[in-house]
Length: 342
Image (cartoon, rainbow, N blue to C red):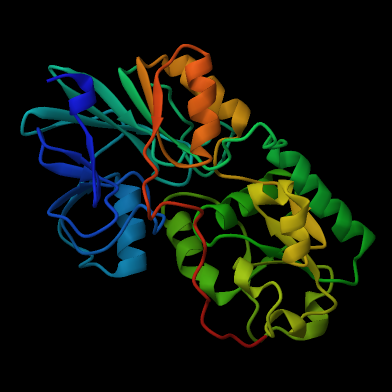
């Protein structure tokens, strides 16, 4: 078996015939290896799921304890035999428990990156480059225009705005899994010790992070807090809450959104974002290209995002590449959260 035959693209996603399992399938299957807990990669209804214990906990929190018929946790670096293959999970640096899937047979080594980033994140283990024959990468921000600044710089912008506008609440839109907890940890590292206020949709996953050893500090639910007490406070909520009726009950809120997409000014304007924060949990262009160089694969496959640019760059640098264009992957957009009063 050649390396290119280890995984093949099917209507349900990447399938390994030699091991009879899928990696991050886009529909329910008998056996799935899941790289991380975001809903575009981790779906309920599989027969058996193999993932890190943190990812399994996230899936159980989101979908209920019976999200799969059976589950098995794998530690980073631990190898397991699945039929004629060996599977190892390595850190991806994306969110808590995120992993790359290394699939090995006698024919070679294939790595599925899942979503990943190279920037430091106090909430998860850092990405580890894995030499392989075929590297299957994401490319969410796979254009040269995307150059993420250090997240610490963006946190400093938020704290500066808080000092300039102490009478206004600062409402930060952030995805409830990964981004919200990373922002909280970065604020704590920057010396912000006040309670951070949360939309109710954030509570369960913040509690899960705390249960896994992350010291998020004092967190308070917004519901029931008098409006005047929220002046000069930081409130983290789903992005969909930035401009709805819920946000209008806050004291003259500064609308902020933490996302790599805030590099695109039109996106910030469309969302009526006053304070864009370029904080991403995906690799930017430099990180993507650096990773490919470090991994040094014989071939690059690109699952989703700005595939063509990364494929072109790879070919120009002597690495054969092709886009997979897997439907169902993409940015971790939140569903509309349940209604909540302030």
